[in-house]
Amino acid sequence: MPLMLYNTLTRRKEPFAPIGETVKLYTCGPTVYHYAHIGNLRTYLFEDILVRTLRYDGFSVRHVMNITDVGHLTSDADEGEDKMEKGAAREGKSVWDVARFYTDAFKDDIRRLNIGEPDIWCKATDHIPEQIAQIETLERRGLTYAIGDGVYFDTAKVDDYGKLARLDIEKLKAGARVEVASGKRNPADFALWKLSPTDGAKRQMEWDSPWGTGFPGWHIECSAMSMKYLGEHFDIHCGGIDHIPVHHTNEIAQAEGATGRKPWVNVWMHGEFLVIDKGKMAKSGDNFLTLQALVDKGYAPLVYRYLCLTAHYRQQLGFSWEAMESARSSYESLRNKIVDLKGKSGIGGERSEAKAHEDAFARAIDDDLSTPKALAALWDLLRDDAIAPAQRVALAQRFDEVLGLGIARFGEDEIPAQIAALAREREQARARKDWKRSDALRDEIRERGYLVEDRDGGGYAVRKA
Ligand SMILES: [Zn+2]
Image (cartoon, rainbow, N blue to C red):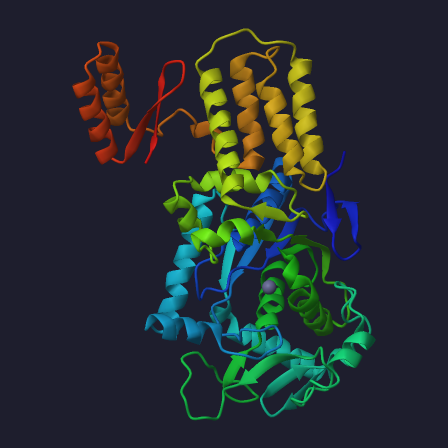
């Protein structure tokens, strides 16, 4: 079966066929004025599964992700406060320091979630000339107009504007008639270049341009940078579903406008929202959840990854502490199962049986990245006693090239030898009913950042505190 991917542009699952030898992929990156919310991180997890699946299926991939570090406005409608300047004011830092700090924080989050880095990171502020050049091209093609506060894209000049979101332009016009007072020709028109306010206040991020000192609109960075690194026609472009009606719609208008209406991206893919269960979450006062907030509650980052894999990326995923608890329990069972199998010897079954599991996994993941089915295939394999333990572990590690749950490391090098030795010593103390010694050892282990827990029915487990 070929890899099937759901294309937002056609609203269908389609067999994936790359344009050239290397799959060219662009994913919209973070705006670095604050920490990433776990809902944003869910989108990066889905994109990571996509990249891993492509590579698992034998494609080579060139993955580009941007960092939005230019001050943009808080709303998609080119209005409101500047996010970067707001972040800087909040923290008493320069916008450049804020951008650097949250870029590092973002990279740390994705590393902890075992999300692979893109082949190319590109920062919006490093590509101002490219953005200006694209706006000039659009200007030459007669697709722009200037008003008091900047240069805008004239969406009425493009026949298929809104094709990705299937926007009803007539309805949009009727609904927005009252609000189009800013001088824009059409409600959907958007800023390509905003002039700095003439209030005399010096902005920390502004650049000279043929239209005056100011800064680029949000959408132009993604079309300019993706075309620089991936060319005028490439394979896949991803983001969250909230990008469909405005950001990606406008990226298409700009990119195809700049190339003279040539098709730009073949496949558009979008990740659904993470829905925070407000009723359940309100009590704990968590309205802006970061990965660190989960870690502070005692969850390993990969437990969140496991939770995200239990839902298909095009389905909403409900987040609650109960859901996290359930994901932790499954993740721990997975770890225990792998550690158990690693300690067992046994003779393998038929090759064909292992092959059946491998096929089931490939079918799942090739069905538009169905991670719930892929997890089920993993569990079916692990429980199949007809296959030798070592073979099951080896195959599980192969599946983990896609799942990214850290299976290879289960039971190995996770607990420092010194801690493991203390835990063994404590177990021996317990065996001879020397409770004072065993309690002292438990405290020592805790002081070193680990917890030792006794299991029902005997045995113990050590984990990071
Ligand atoms: Zn983008």
